[in-house]
Length: 198
Image (cartoon, rainbow, N blue to C red; front, side):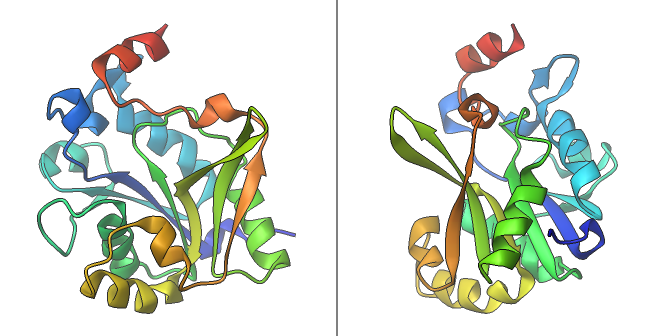
């Protein structure tokens, strides 16, 4: 039992400063012959009904890739939750899923597994996790949420909150374990980008 993709909007998060990459716009860095965000979009597209990109600079470059581009509503690069909020404000679907632009190899069944958990456990939010050395490692930016969570998110951000796990406490939330930890590897530096290219 999973949510039909027609009910799910997809949002690729590419709104950060890229500080560990010397201020580079990570989504636009070349990866295997195309901008990194393009790989992420192509991987998410079969899993959702519509796609958008959350970006705060180089908007024309993102628009040229064929997706709707949504900047943060609040300024000063306020982090992933600001991207969540921007996406939810524009979301016309019952659910929205987010993925970061810098993990181009995330699972092709990401949305299916998250949606199964959300339905079975009657959650507001389901997010990815993996087991590494016997410990649960969470990946909260890989997140499927009901669009109604915009209410608690706007309140949380308005109160100065910025941390995803703190916002999660205001919703019925659970993690979903995925087998392949490497699928969630993210690229933060030029060196990591070179390694993943190989």
